[in-house]
Length: 37
Image 1 (cartoon, rainbow, N blue to C red):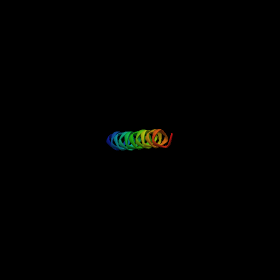
Image 2 (image 1 turned 90 degrees about the vertical axis):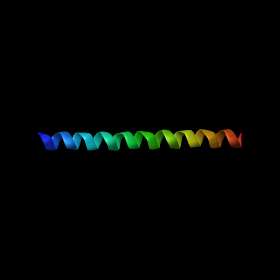
Image 3 (image 1 turned 180 degrees about the horizontal axis):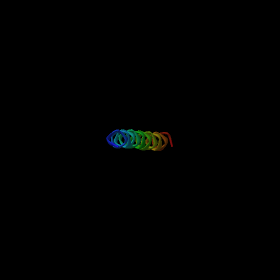
Image 4 (image 1 turned 90 degrees about the horizontal axis):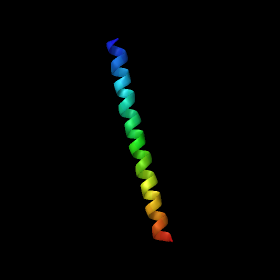
């Protein structure tokens, strides 16, 4: 049971990191597009 909880916690952290990275990339892309317009 405890192991499952730790695994879930780790998964959540990874998911959050992935979301942040995706948002950052998206933001940078939009900024670059604005620069080149």
